[in-house]
Image (tube, rainbow, N blue to C red; front, side):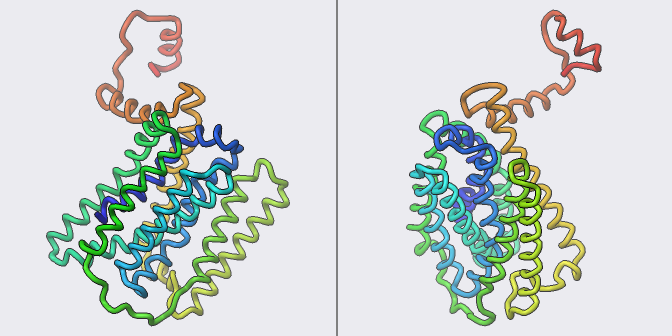
Length: 325
């Protein structure tokens, strides 16, 4: 059940990308505005992830997991019913908050439930498989749902999974021990770091349309908010990011940088591939999701195989320019 819920969260990070052209046609998004359908989810998810983990320590893992699941399911309903750009972006941001509450609580539940090292290793292996495979499944599923029943169903598909998981929380999950409240709740830190990220991303996305002075001002605001976040973390009793945590562990700093670059690359690739592939190959949303898998399987079978059939003028020009495309 926990892995199914995590799969739902991972799917929602990529399933939307294939449906973006249909959403743009339906709600009239601009090119820059359309990216906020993706960014609103990712920014709130990343910004409130640490706070979600702290909430599990304060209020109990099962309680927090159920609350985040209910919030995520409700936000999915709002996304599917959205009739305006603002409502869809706001609902996507709410989805990100729900996902940020669920993810750390779910991982903590797995670690505390499976105490035997062998069972825990198997559970973590399943968890890793769900996380790694969910992104690819989301790209394919997004195309199928958008083409067959319409883009709102990429959000409605979360409803039965969420409701079923909610009904199973109490009978399947162990009761929470008495939670501790020592240290408090670092809500200012979470708000500051999320606001800083939103300002920076908005500055980058709107750089082509906004005046340079406004873009520079937004970047300065983002930097000031990040400085304020660092100051708050030094003074609070229970910081989201303890001061000096990265300096004390160089491997932690490097792994976080690599992970951030990987996420940026993958999400950006899915976003632009969905838009470009649809414009170049078809008017339906499924090819962007299926093209990558077809291309990969074909290249794995014969990466350098020459084309079949007689040579054509275009084929000759490709050979002359350095090989087959």
